[in-house]
Image 1 (cartoon, rainbow, N blue to C red):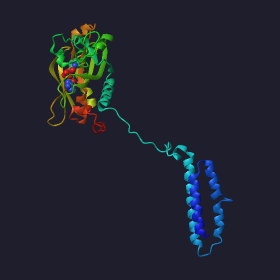
Image 2 (image 1 turned 90 degrees about the horizontal axis):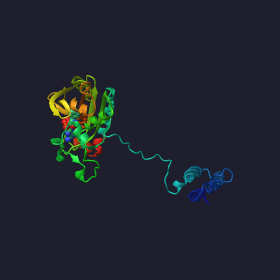
Image 3 (image 1 turned 90 degrees about the vertical axis):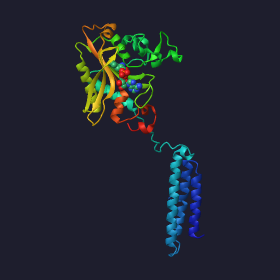
Image 4 (image 1 turned 135 degrees about the vertical axis):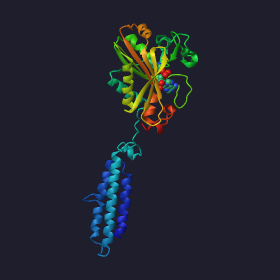
Length: 337
Ligand code: FA5
């Protein structure tokens, strides 16, 4: 038989047996049979090479090398596959690099809340929490909002009884402001008090670009000896500047809240041409009646309180035009933060 035909036959037989080897031991036997250094069939073929004519030598030599390389590679591949049985069976290769899972991140509002707590923490305010499902006492009465006050209108609040939820002792509602936490804290803690509380509040407001029926407020409360409105304004100015930058200005407009006296609306502006004042919250000095109802002595201590819209600050910082984007669950929006 001519040497090229012998090499072809050798290659076919070797590749066939390599593919058929079912385990590493069988594969090793195939290796010895075909490539064994002493009695392997390739060794035999090599000795044939010495016998071919001078003219044929380059062609046969080239083919010999090709066959040897191919069979050696096939052996290596099969060995790797048999060393990983699941892969040999067409299953999972746990040694391959995994599919990277994309990491999530905090919602922009949660990032904002963390930053608020951080800034206010530096001013000495600790974070307090209160329930989102409130009783009428904490949402209204303790805040000086009497029974006949329009703010208690069922149409302006989310009462749970109306939704068929069993509310146990007395009517319950989703809190409409974080001011409820002022009361819950003062019921437990003696002055001096310096807290903030950030959380969700609920109002059946008409939804538009700047109003939502569920939004976040940051409540602040500071009570102690000789606390004045000057401190209130300073804290709000420093806070707004820490979050939004040093060109922010704060303005107080006279207003009314049943639980503060005097009361103000807080507006914010910044040094850009034609920028209007933007309302960001309400504030005031804690009403002496509220202080005495929680057992504080209004002749000895005074305090200020404020409630800021968290979304409004975040929207201003990032130039977000529509509050509805926060709850749109649109990853294109969320990925930007
Ligand atoms: C209050 O809620 C008072 N509790 C604030 C307060 C606290 C006064 C302590 C005095 C002492 P007001 O209803 O104005 O106030 O709401 C405060 C802020 O919440 C608003 O300035 C605004 O920034 C934000 N806000 C109010 N309604 C909405 C809404 N529907 N969507 C988004 N943000 C709102």
